[in-house]
Image (cartoon, rainbow, N blue to C red; front, side, top):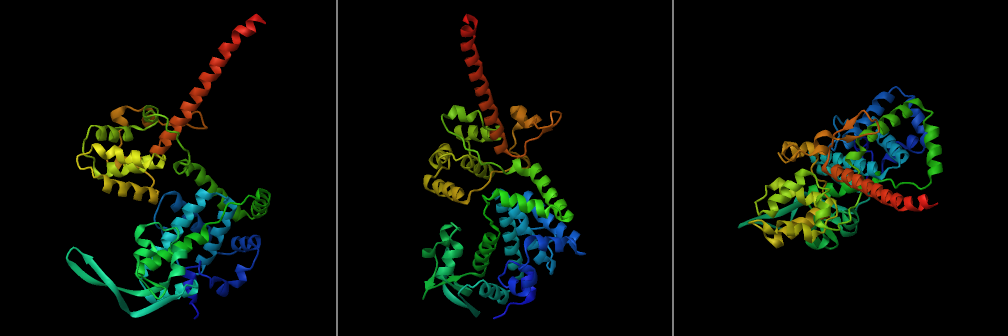
Length: 404
């Protein structure tokens, strides 16, 4: 079964890319890059790649103005080369997530079972296609029953391979209908599995061979168009990376010590909870996501809600554990303001209101995320402790120096 050229242009991550574009797929990366930036389409290709990075850094769910034509193939291949050159896991994850979500949205909008079957076949998935759809069980909502129908079944080995990183309970093999080694999957579920394949295609591992990487970047930087694009992406990342780099950990020694690091928006929610006030939906989500991001123990997060009038331990435990599995990022400052959860003015918090110093002593940067508040507070605390230790050490040494 041969897949169409149009589908490869639309989805260049398909294995048949090598068949239709073997002339460019077999070229060394430097030669391929030189060809791109010496072509009449070089500016358009570069703009499309830059657009993907901008969208990823802006936390978008889809790539704006995404186009589907033969240039899409060059964009995809150049994107992979740039990710290798950047050698940054954080950037790679964001690009892989965005690009795969974009593919999911495109396939879902098209809603073409025939295309999905062709794509699955090209990926080497062992799959069955049914037209018309077949029934495989009942969906029960309250007292209403309706048959479950699907166009697809997928072999359980392929299902497990693609779903291995999807940790939702309902995706477990034991929670799905399995007959003769094939799992019955809804169209959207199959598309979600394909999305995971796309994501993995872009997850390039960071290389430890820094010398080879440096030599490669030096060589491709001689190609002016590539250097301009690469520098723009790096510049964008320098501006935005602090919004995403929340990889620090906090050693929880005491409740009082931890509270000194919290921004006022968190203190306000905790105060309400301690007083037994009922929290709004967004307040509950925010405090859970925030504390879990700091690796606060699940049991401690659950106990925060124990004072609320509608507290249900079993339900709260399920929701908090689910949030931990999903690894949600807490609301950023702009979202907190729009939801009325920003408490900078109420608490007259200097860091929230005036920002913090940057490399340029004349410039102050405003906070964009509450986790950045914690990181800055933690940094200042550590520096202050270091200063006090050095001061105490000098005072101890003073009598000794005077005696000498």
